[in-house]
Image 1: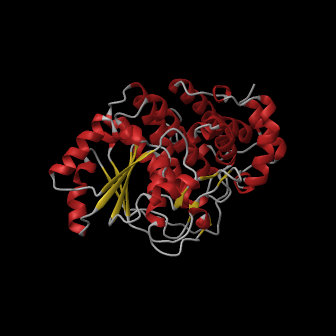
Image 2: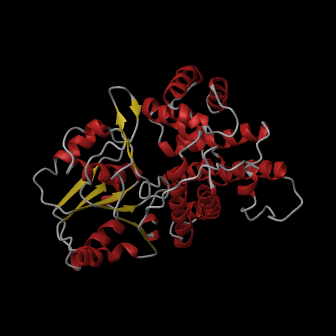
Image 3: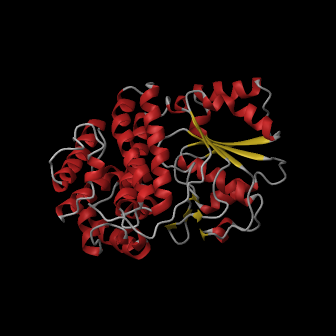
Length: 394
């Protein structure tokens, strides 16, 4: 079993509503807070969905008037230049609250816009940790995917196209006033997006449990997140309108975000960044495809910390005489079985990543993402990253 970090500190700054139909209550909450000029940042693909149109009509019927609606691009992850452009469209608009609605990229965009409306200068000036000087315009987030955990993290991630790196605006003042987790908003989520976002959440959950920086709180939330995701994802894929399954994935994603916020990500998270920036691999799939290979590598090298995850899955008895090593191996098997059940990709071919790209991706990872490699419970350097990438390329 992995040894918990004894120098523990954590943050659980979250204000969340959870429940079917929770998003319909937002006008009442805003009115009680005296917010009378809200604006909306919504994923352009989400904006046209019947579920969204019905929700907006309901808000309007309750007297909530949006002073501005910004349709966010959904074809690729946002960069800092796009954040600056989007924030500029809000200049001169008297708004007292930003509502972000969509997947992780749109939620990050909403957080970034809120910050820039009360902090001067280009967004790149705030890249890094605790560089935001003043609180931004308050933000309320309504995720329409269960994966990124953006609604609970103190991070807004964007790509710097000049340096071709991805690094977020992090720390102080980067968060939301309220997050609304309404399973109804997931019912129209396409199957492929459900899978990718679910794998993203699973990476957060597993790495928050096994990182060398893990502590009691990250393990508590990470283990429960993994249980909920293993239970909910297959059903959400088979029955997209099953709100119980959607609720499980939502809570799993949210708990995983809380866990990840406190310890950071491991190798799967780290390698996913250059894959996204240089090859356009969606973040959830980039990390998700690597996760079972990281698990296999760690188990093969004697790491048994996955036992605590295995014990929470229904098919592994928690109080058996099975050794931790066997339980860890059972978790690896459970991962492969889950991917098979979901029809999830296990390689990067569809995004054009080939074996000849591996060396450059390794260079980028070991140069830019050492922090992610260092928290892996088994030493993970250049040779190990090379082997992981070769396992998912042809």
